[in-house]
Length: 495
Image 1: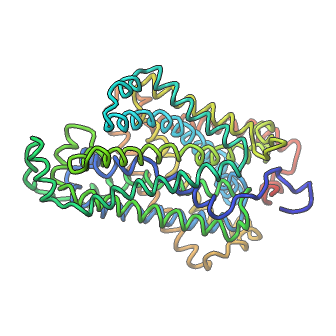
Image 2: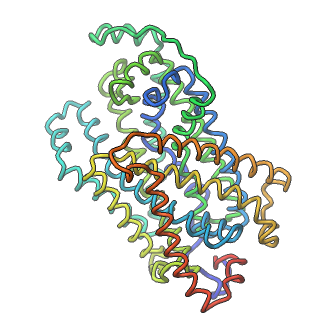
Image 3: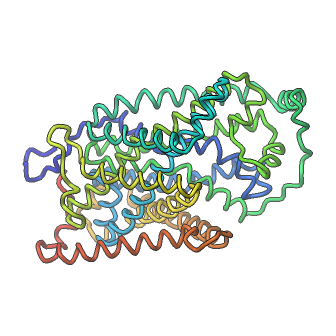
């Protein structure tokens, strides 16, 4: 940090490469890997033998967006990265509006994740034969209480500072990979013949015959859009840019580590399950029930092995919370620091050097996500809103790489990760692919049959954008009366 107090944000650069990478990895690697590749056959018939291909296709726009984030993060390492990038490259409005929908979607997702932890804990104790405890975890009051306890424990961890944050996150990440490795080892240790024999011995019937599986390009793209949701999270590294040590080196490196390690884990994990379990069986089961990796491999594994897989999913969910809370709170902090949000949200804790008001406010919105999931009995709307928000956000990051040299040449000169021609190629391809994914996601959402309009994530997202626009224009009008807004948004915030 600079020695000039007037140029300090109040945050401290104490987050090292390991903590940055863990922030991205833990924000990405949740329980979705245990569910998404296997329930996909319900939404996209015929995808069965092509899941790995769809995963690889989903990784392409994610990788392009990651390169855009890495380029911008190295050039503008500040808290609330995506807001700062878009507000300096495109306009203050797009910076705030897009990041507000991102903040809303991620905060609701934090609540959804908190609410989903309990069923995984229930399944874990069930595999150990603790039926009474499992029944207790099924009760509404207990589930709600435990969900809130997990959320607010990590709110306090975030407020207490980055040292405690890293000491909490890194061991849990290691445990998550260790337990997830059980799936990979077990999956490659068995084959389809083993599964068929185990299924027959338990009275589960036979593996279905291979159906015809013609798959066109549009269904393949639709599957990739759904799987793209599992790559959301590496942007958390950029949001922590104001607290990163050696940010011009560590932010791009951490994003690369997160994308490569998580993407590799996804492919190994999915390949292992399909190596042991015939895709025909997965496709047939997905039509009649929710299919998960523990449920599929449970046919082959002893109870302790199944318990380890379920616990891995629970740990992955728990790991989401501190990393995602860090990300969303830094967005709010950055808005307040620029003056497009109430200044109180930029308050820094005098002892822990964390934006404690922004963390509490983000925890409050996540609480709404928990209560909404509990009352509605459904959480998929929140996930769809998040996917819409992140597709827009990632697309804007690619556009920011393209537009920054025109709007702010001085800041653009700091983008040295890629040569200018490669930057333009990556950003242009990323914007095009992400735009295509957004169109496919929106069409799928608007064509889905739901009880009321507000169950369409597109309309809810547009409503949120309307709220964001109202907040922005009200605050921006006042801001222009006090400061030179053009100058403010042509330079970086204190850092």
